[in-house]
Length: 373
Figure 1 (cartoon, rainbow, N blue to C red):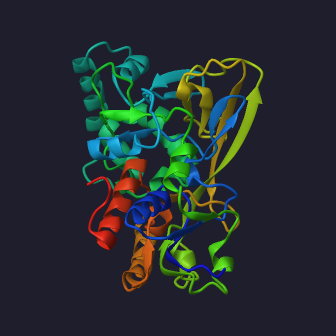
Figure 2: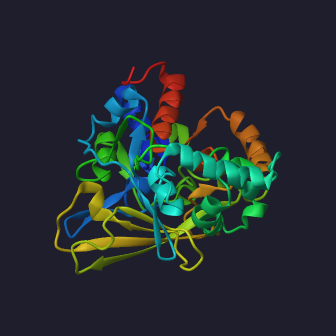
């Protein structure tokens, strides 16, 4: 390529798209590349059978930051979807998050006082003062019944490790709501973009040059001087050639199928919390937009260990990986012309609103302001 850019942005997901949009608003030129054959990163949605499929898992936008909410609404109209997942333990169904509907299903209690008494009886009986792992942390917060049916096996499927081998800080707290409220998030702003997420990224990248099916490490050979600066949203350890060894990630495998029926499970998200089934949850995509199509599309999600050749999704933020990331972060902090962003560049799980805020921060460091200011 002969054209020169102000910024090479590696990754056409939300972070990269926000940065590109703001850079262009500051009269900068951007080349955005992505190794996948489409833009959008993990929030990519694809219309099938008139249903906007969340190809890489459910993404519900939620935030307490009105500025972020107003910003994202520039690019799409959002519906009033409220996330209210259901948990299935064998043949038992429970509402999430843990609330009075959950407690009534578990114990038949009808009042907050009864529910609090039941939880207190179980936690005090265990006598855990200083939790040393995730299992003890969860038991000390919610007791045996909730832990056994709704946390233990689901967590072990998700992380591929026994709860006794996971650090306690993964579950710093478990929200207990003593109201009959199935709204999973506390944030006042919540919804799904009508027509899916891909349109948001398309509008943000309007004006940028975009190359898909383009791997950075192949592309940069021979294009070392393509841009003044690089915004890198891929794996930070891979950027440095795994110099200190690879960080650990969890990945997800999706089995998606179209069913010749209108309504498969009656809810967008159903978690399967026992080892009885191998997947962690089933997503029924049409319910995110209150669809009435004659067919439906579901995705089963299987958590698995990351290895080269598959997508990394979740960083394994234990002490060992934290120490390893700190070494890569030290290298990153010395870079003058590379900005690391997103969940992989920062080895941290971000909700979408936090991704936008992180991109805002990077933009302000570069240009002193964003269009959201």
